[in-house]
Image 1: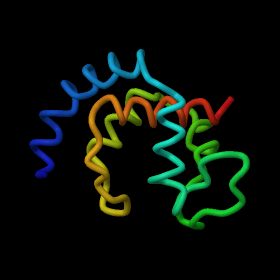
Image 2: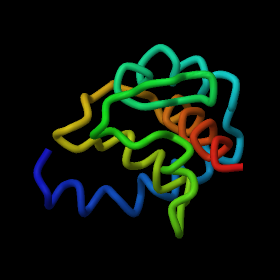
Image 3: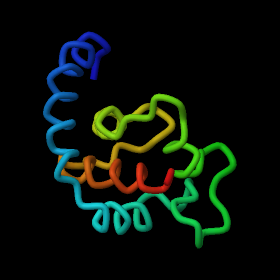
Image 4: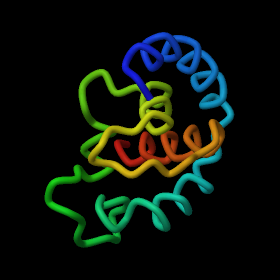
Length: 104
């Protein structure tokens, strides 16, 4: 997707994803994280290892200015280092809510 299209879609998607994130399902997000993300990220306290280049979910959630809505948008528009998981808005919100819960 071109940068221009991403820039034009980002504000709209952020609004939609932020609203969806308010009703996110953390338990579903955990299931997704363990299935899709654990090969690279440390997704939970009971996981001992991940890829050294992928930050643990707890570190992501503790970053200054962390926002689950913005993270959900990022998950819908992934960068080259992260595979496109073809998530729905609800799935992205669930995963972002789970990641946010790891910072507590």
